[in-house]
Image 1 (tube, chains in turn brown, blue):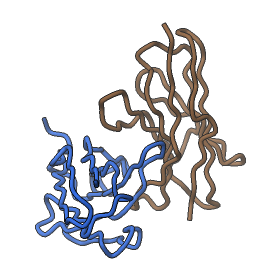
Image 2 (cartoon, chains in turn orange, green):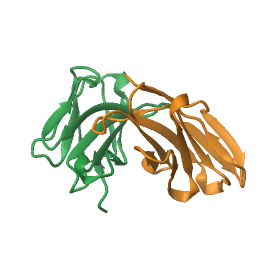
Image 3 (cartoon, chains in turn brown, red):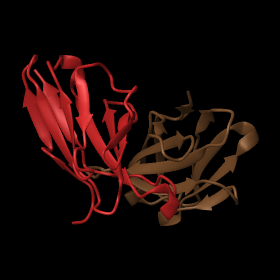
Image 4 (cartoon, helix red, strand yellow):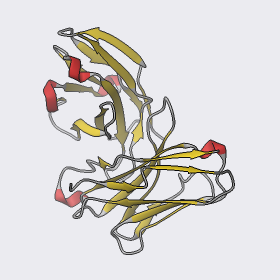
Amino acid sequence: AQSVSQHNHHVILSEAASLELGCNYSYGGTVNLFWYVQYPGQHLQLLLKYFSGDPLVKGIKGFEAEFIKSKFSFNLRKPSVQWSDTAEYFCAVNVGGADGLTFGKGTHLIIQP
Amino acid sequence: DTGVSQNPRHKITKRGQNVTFRCDPISEHNRLYWYRQTLGQGPEFLTYFQNEAQLEKSRLLSDRFSAERPKGSFSTLEIQRTEQGDSAMYLCASSLPILAGDRNEQFFGPGTRLTVL
């Protein structure tokens, strides 16, 4: 079974700082990779996804992620964060497309104005 | 609002009681998923349906948990003889058929928060 590891459980940054959140997965085959975000009081929503092709994927609100197959990683990045990026971020993976997602434990990101 | 809806949003029950939650997916989505999320953890996949067929149920936490989707539209998740350890947020998600593209982008509902006293 696959698993997902998110290295940072709590991250505090100042506005305009650059962001990188780590995500590693364990599975030797083809995977689909996702980053979801949960803003305070809201439900989970998709930030970006990778299925195949260009390993650098761009999502909403200026976020991007890079799939590095050799490192089993799918790190999330944003060059300049805003106060409104304060949220919980979850990395997720699934195999075969149809099955449920396996999530990491999440990273709680706080942006200080 | 055309997103995934879940009812009730909050449920408080006493240990040993049965509870049932409802999920209404986005109308054109034929796949429906149930997850459980406890404090400090990411969502944990429980089961999913394609139309009315339950294609995966080995991840249901115990035989006290069951789910149905009788007409391929809304779904219910039932927990029998609730225990305090069942206290969690129960999330529902739905997605388009895979052949429609955007493979398995799942859209989540707001969840039902269960508290077992």
